[in-house]
Length: 241
Ligand code: F6R
Image (tube, rainbow, N blue to C red; front, side, top):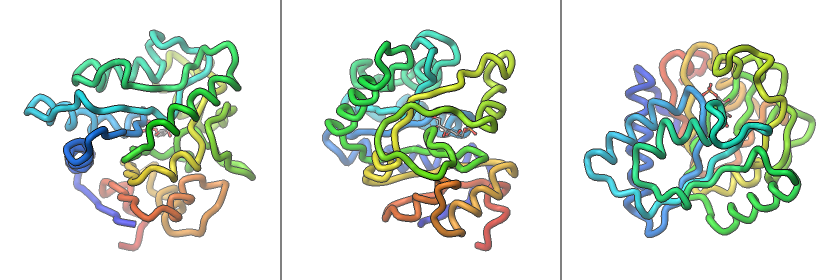
């Protein structure tokens, strides 16, 4: 694993955006696997700047990791709304080339199959990941087993608590989500894992330096041959670098 430590999330975001740019300019039909959450905002800001300075993204396809169940795409806390706000509305990726699971599908099993087919049709060139304080990637929560494909997940109490900051209160946080599975994540040709802040320091150490454990889902990234971990000094503070 290639571990890079930056002074600030903003510096780290610029570096991550430069990696995305390389993928976008080197492929005929680049497919970007995207994430939501606080961590990826500096990356999207830097990427939007690159687009404003001339980077063409009209040929890009995007696939997001996950979506809350029960939130319509136009709900302000849906992940579709997050992506519109922080990226899609600011760059020229055609709307029909941006994919997220549908959190209000009436048949959730069929929706998972539909999303698996979208992933199969659009093999991911680079997957962006954040990490939960409990080690989740996407919404693959700590468990005895990790599920390979797209699936419905019950969010852990810890995740609900952490994500309450985006809602009025904890009660409003959906209890379930649809998430890409770990095999789909591992099938990306390249992976970038971002983490910032002291509160991520211990889980980053566990994910990167302990063995592979299903109760630390991000540790499965140790199996991938092209992972770049992009940290700030706080999140790197428990690593022996
Ligand atoms: C979001 C996602 C999650 C987040 C993780 C970190 O699409 O897949 O795994 O990356 O919960 O969230 P933040 O960045 O808000 O700390």
